[in-house]
Length: 342
Ligand code: SF4
Image (tube, rainbow, N blue to C red; front, side):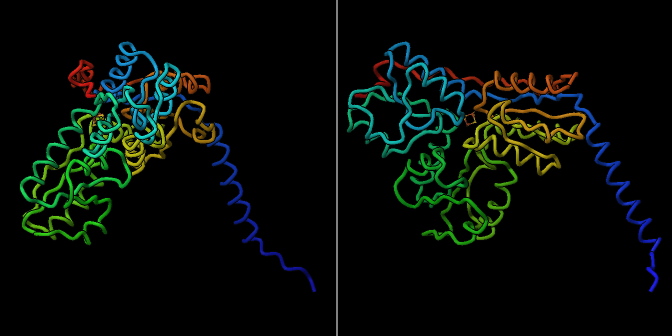
């Protein structure tokens, strides 16, 4: 029986493989030209203050200086301070009595403050003032007899610290499901605050559910801080100009993760990198430009390293979004005897 050849089908196959070949060729030949830097990016005022506080403590008291948890959520900052004689601890109880202990920028609970006192530690509080203001709100709502709902991530030190400013009637709400099921004593007396490093998008859905369940609920639009908001807004601008985003920041950094998510939501392919060594060339193939930003705890030198890597890879143009100048700054925590509670 003669073999029947379906010429139409063969032409179709040939045309498909030609298209595939051309698109792959074009993609490989498209060369990265432009690096677009976000502005503002990187260190916020709270991070600058926390690091300066630890450095001052080192100068004044010598090493070792103990810090409860990571001073800020960045691997490189932590390693650099370790090199200067800072010891990062997970448990207060493991710090030798009488030692100087710095509380990180994320803040701590009242129970931690009391435990430090009972262990005879000399404490310095590097909590970001914007986190401290959330603490004051939690305490105020609690004193007014409200159940306080903290919109934020479970097990994040900032959220745990804020929740631990009061005893009882405080709930962490991490999702819309939790907003639908949280039980309060009096639905007429409910208030909320938020983690400072969320995105407005994360908060909006949860807040809507809470407002439906508790129409009398009180709270701010959010406690998302100026630095988080500014960096997220700039990522949305970047999405108008490029479709690949590199966010310099550690995996543990909430605001860096949110920057990547905001970028993805705005249509970019986003990657979170600790430094230039994490970049994979295949991420850039077929893209003429790449956007670069950095989380609030990522040092600028890491951004410079990323720019250098991209230039070595072939980028010839480096431009920076005009952005808006940030004027917030905080003095380092006082190290005088008042703050060194024995
Ligand atoms: S991200 Fe905002 S709240 Fe957190 S340390 Fe920086 S300024 Fe303070």
